[in-house]
Length: 142
Image 1 (cartoon, rainbow, N blue to C red):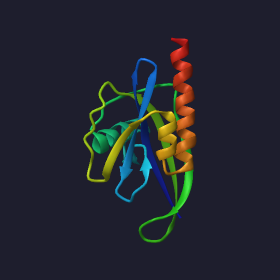
Image 2 (image 1 turned 90 degrees about the vertical axis):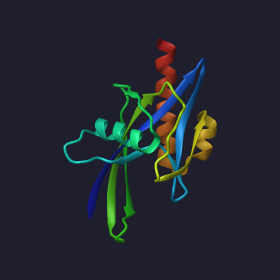
Image 3 (image 1 turned 180 degrees about the horizontal axis):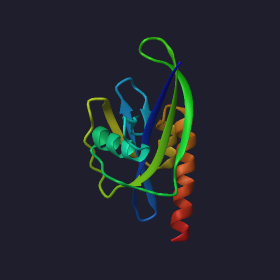
């Protein structure tokens, strides 16, 4: 079995009391967060930031106190069973300008409820709920 590792960023834009999250539509049709493989000699944080820049043209600073991961099984392009572990961080952007890569067909900036409706996978929905709770707690304490 193959073991793969990816990293991604839950990008948010905050104006007044509204938080919007960046979702990307992948060419296969699903909606998810920007993410991709961790390359040799790269930390998971570096991979997450690189993938975000490549996939959406976004630059963010990651919150130090938020890191979540999950694992899942899938069939790779060769039809072999693979296990992937994905690490996610949260990053705040100052700009909603997005430059999509060839891997994506669309993007959306959505508030929590709409983002939960649009996300394709349950693990991404669970992750977004954790990220949103983290941010709301962070903003209340500041």
